[in-house]
Image (tube, rainbow, N blue to C red; front, side, top):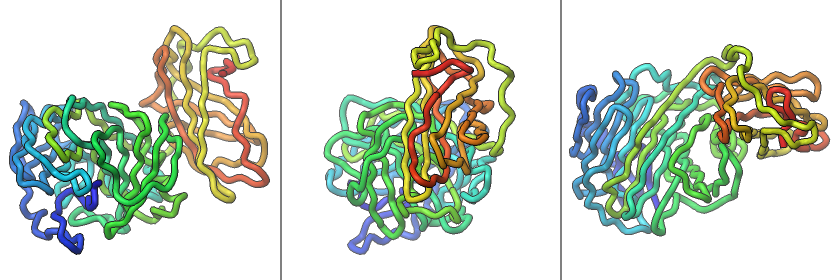
Amino acid sequence: MSIVRGMRMRLITAGLAMLGSVAASLVVGQAAHADTTICEKYGSTTIQGGKYVVINNVWGSDAQQCINVTNTGFTVTQAGHNKAQNGAPASYPAVYAGCHYANCSSGSGLPLAVGNSQFNTVQTSVSMSYPGSGVYDAAYDIWFDPTARRDGQNTGAELMVWLNHTGSVQPVGSKVGTVNLAGGTWDVWFGNTGWNVVSYVRTSPTNSINFAVRTFFDDMVNRGYAQRSWYLTSVQAGFEPWVGGAGLAVNNFSYSIGGVVQSPSPSPTVSPTGGNGNGGGACRVSYSKSEWQGGFTGNVTVTNTSSSPVNGWNVGFSFPSGQRITGYWSADVTQSGSSVTAKNLSYNSSIPAGGNVSFGFQGTWSGSNGDPTGFTLNGTRCS
């Protein structure tokens, strides 16, 4: 159980206090072009011309840990950890965009006010590899602060997205619910270690994910664990090892930010075929929502079940009554009466054969909040 996390640069005392001098011990390397090996506890280097920072970050162990940094991620090559699984992890080797104890990447646009319209378009993805042994979690660590903080410990909320974990480790606090988001089902955990820690633990492990940060943040706000007046300060992806850890790898990591409304791609060149107007077409839709009195968030996943890719997509559907969309992400969404249209953005215009794309929105409702119906993909009815 990860008792205390902060920015992964702290020691645990009886009072859960941080070692304030830790930030000063950062060892910052030069920009990585060829592979770079880091064994210093708090060593770091930049990749892709400074776009991302990779950190070794051995904050909870005296065992040596080394990472091999490539231009797209890193691999843990040595890790002699042997920590009790009911305590804090040994380290958090990670790649990130944004600022971590004043060690900031270039061009991230962070810190970013959550209330800024650009927050809606913050998107990230990661692919990971896991060894056949060891005890660890594989997780995003996304940080929010009441101020535009670039140095020191964030005090707002820590959002963790656990893609996988082994052994008996578990997040801070206790389980408070289950939710369907970003194409998966997640157990939601909440605890407080001087700041709110909200962890989403995937019920079926995965080694890759692509999502809008707002997808999880909106759920945090709805549960009362975060505030829209805060700032996003960093987006990190890596591992918390308790036992061993050699072989854990981030193969690819991406982070992007853009305007609220992006120009849609050109007209579709390939559309699904075979629809019969009664739900038997070459696309399949799943819809999940999280609601509270008068408000809700919805997530739509569209799967291309045809044998051809879709290059440029337009998803249509209708609300039964009383719903009004007030915000959206991962698509350009417009509404006229009960009819809604969602168009691809520049970065997610293609749906490969057998692949899927997800987008989401926030809205208000009155009377009842029934699920949308009549989903179509480029004019073809979906099942």
